[in-house]
Length: 551
Image (cartoon, rainbow, N blue to C red; front, side, top):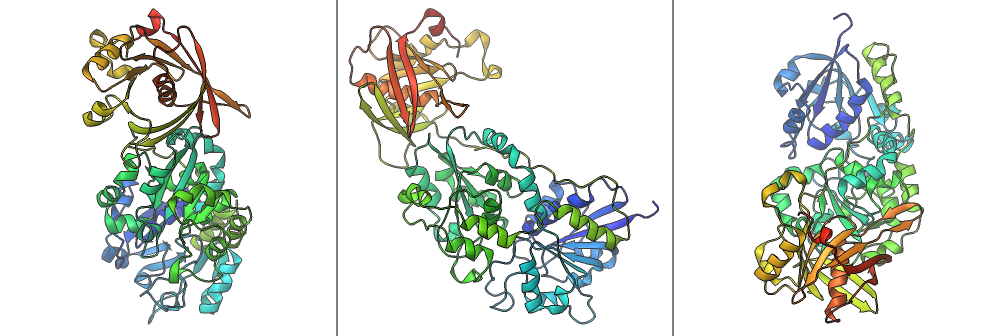
C-alpha cells in the first residue's frame, strides 16, 4: 500500500503496555499504519506482558527479530532496556501520572523513576529519543534539570489515560450498577508495588475494613499495581486477599477496570502510587493515606502534594472518622500539578506523531474511547452476623460478613448460597427466587412449601423466609401456622429511588418478632434503619397467592 507506515510498541512490562494501548487510540481507524508489539527484555515484571498482547490480538515480534527491522515509529513508555537497539523514530511517554518516586537500586538515588540520566542518554552510537511526550510543563522542567538535550525534544501533550477517565465521567451510574454498589458508599483502596506499598505495609487492611464496615452501607474495591500482580501471580494474590474477597470486595482488573472503578468511587484510601492522581483529577472527593511513601516519594512531586494535605488512616476502625476529616483542596491541587492540556491529549499527540511519520492525520478525529463497565465482585457474602437494636417499631440493622468479627443478635444465611455448617447455625434462613433458567417447572418449591421444609430440616432456625422480589418477602416463625408478607418500601433521595436489600429488612422483622411472641395479628408498620437511611416495612398476613409463588 502506498504510504504505509510501521509502528512498533515496545513494552518492558504490563503497566507500560497499558499506557501504550491508550496512546494507540491516536491512530484509530488509520489503514495506512501497521502496528507491531515487542517485549523489551530485562524487567522483573514482564511475565504478564505477552499474555496482554495476546488478549488484544496484537502481532508480536520476538525481541531479536524486532531489533533487525526498521520502523517508521517506535513507541515506548519506559526509558529502561536496550531501546537504542530498535531502529526508527522513537517516542517516549511516562508510564504513570508524572514522576513521583525513585526506585531503590535503579539508577541514581536522587533521580525519579523515568528521569534518570543513565536511561535518557544514549550509549555509544545510539540515537536519542526523538520526542518526550509529557503531561505537564513541570515535567519538562524536571527533565531539563537532568537532561537539557532531552528537554529540548520534549512536548507537553497531556495524559491519554486521563483523557479516557474524563470522557467517561458521565458513565458513573452505569459503572456503579455493574459493580452492584447501589446506595452504598464505594470505598476504593489503591496499592502501588514495592516494600512501601499499601499491601506490603498493611496487608490485613482490606479484611479489617470488611470486618468493620457495615455491608449494607459500604462496598470495598481494591486496585493493585500491575507489577505486584506480576510478582505474585493472580492465584497467589487472590488467595492472600481471600477473606476480603469472600466478604464481597471487588478486585479490579489491571487494565481499564481500575479507571472505571475510580470514577464510580465515593472515597479512596491510597499509598504513594499515582493512581490517586487520576482519582483526584476526576473530582475532589474524600481521600486518606496509609503513610507518606517512605524513602521512595520524591519531595515536591504531585503525590507529595496530595499526601501532605490529606488525613492519615491509623486503625481501620477509624476509617469513617478519617474520611470525614478530609477537606477539599489537596486533591485538586495535586491533579493540577500532575496534568495539563486536559481534553487535548489525543489530538496533540496525534499532531506530533503524524508529523514524525510524514503523514497527514486522517480527516476524522481521535476521540477518547470510553472505559468499559468494570466486572463486579465474583464472590458475595451469603451469611451475616447481624447486629440489631430494636426501639419500638424502629429496628437498626448492621450486617457484617459472618466470621470476620464478633457475632451479633442473630446469624442470617442465604440458603443455597452458603455452606451447610452456617445454614445449620442460622437463626434466620432465607432463599431468593432462582433465575428463570435455573427453575425446573415440574419440581419447583412454592414459598410456603420451602419455608415449611426448611423449618423442619433445620431445627436451629427460628425464622425462614422467601425473597420473592425487591419489595416482597414471605416469612414464617417456628411454631406458627400462618405466614407473613413483608413489604419493603423504597425511599426517595433527591429524585432517586433507593432500596434496601430485602434480606436486611427480613433481619429487622426477625429481630422485632424475637421479642414479641405471637407477633401482630393484622398489619404492623415498622422502620428498618440502615446507617442514616430509614426504610418503611409493612408486615401483614400473607395471601394465598403470595405463599404459592414459585421459587
